[in-house]
Image: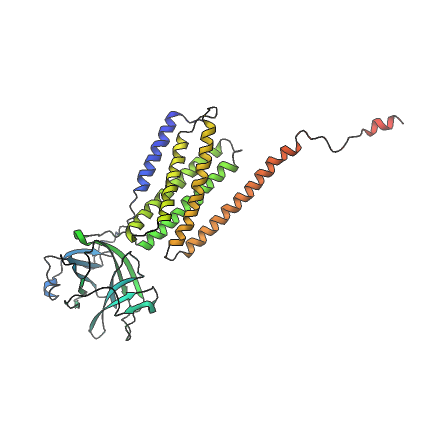
Amino acid sequence: MALSYSSNKLLLSLFCFISTVGFNLKAVIANSNTANPSATCNSKRRAILPPPYSDLSSLSCSLIWNQKFSFSFYQDGQNVTTIVLSGKHNHRWIGVGFSRNGSMVGSSAVVAWVEPNGVSGIRQYYLEDKIMSKVIPNKGNLKFTTARPVVVVHGDLLYMAFQLQFTASLAFQPILLATGSGNPYQNGSLPKHTNSTTTFIEFSTAHHLTAQPMSPDDLRKYHGVTAIIGWGVVTPAGLLVARYFRHLEPSWYYIHSSVQFVGFFVGIISISLGRNLYQKVGAIFIAHKFLGYTVFFLAGLEVCQFVGRPSSDSKRRQYWNFAHYWVGRIAMVLGVLNIFFGFYGVVAHDRAMRIGFGISFVTLLTATILLEARRRREDSIPEAMIDQPPVFQVIDKTSTTGHR
């Protein structure tokens, strides 16, 4: 089935559009709840906070977390960072964490609270794990300066301010934010948080993000889901259509092409999310990354081959068939293999994702085995029956009786 020149141009344009849009997809979640902010950057902190936190001339301020909190900061040339966080005083404790990769585990946090009698407290915690017993008080990687941290309640707003000394200047830094409904226990243990989020601050240019990007855990989840759908389900399904349903002429061709285009587009979204995830967490997962780009290249080559498909009577058709078959099979195998590699490197909770992929993989594998067995059985029937002599002889009883 040969495609017209105009159809080729249309498909090529569609491919380029999908590649450009999908590959440059920005994984950003914008928070739209801006009608009634709970915090403001215009509060009179000079009369509320002591020095150095009362110096408003150098502090950059941003409304974060659905504008419930204001986050002010300043970083000087000696890598000293001053931070002031304020929000409504309707929580028992508020925490600000510094993470290397946006994940809670392995981070250090500064937690502030106010007792019912009005006595305030502030303490550092090391987040060794996500369970309460692994949130260790008075331990962490943050180094306070000689400026004393303060916690102040003014009206309905709570202010926590502290100053940290870093070994190097901060750049694009993941910041963890969390609130809890109970004060720390007498032994310092911190009750489990009731709400949390991750935002990103560009300290080097004093740029703050009012639209919060996806957290690394969300990026992992969506990257994994789109990879499973694109490379692990849709693309193999399109291959099954091409191999086992050719008798549905010409519908199989259009179904196969459409399914592969959908799988390719979803796969591009997965790669885009993966790129953002690598930038956020600074991951060194070379095998997974290399296989991902290899699958993308092979899938793109398949689309180009589809656009340049020669007519059935062309001498080049046999070479095209060979390249199309094997490039497609290699891309599918590497795509599925790379999903397994991705699960090996994921540290987030992904039990449901693993189960879903396992069910999809077993279903496709079972369907392939059954369809292949049926195809081989159907192919073997003509070979066994054509031009074979009969195994019985027909006797005309009437003629035999007449000779007696």
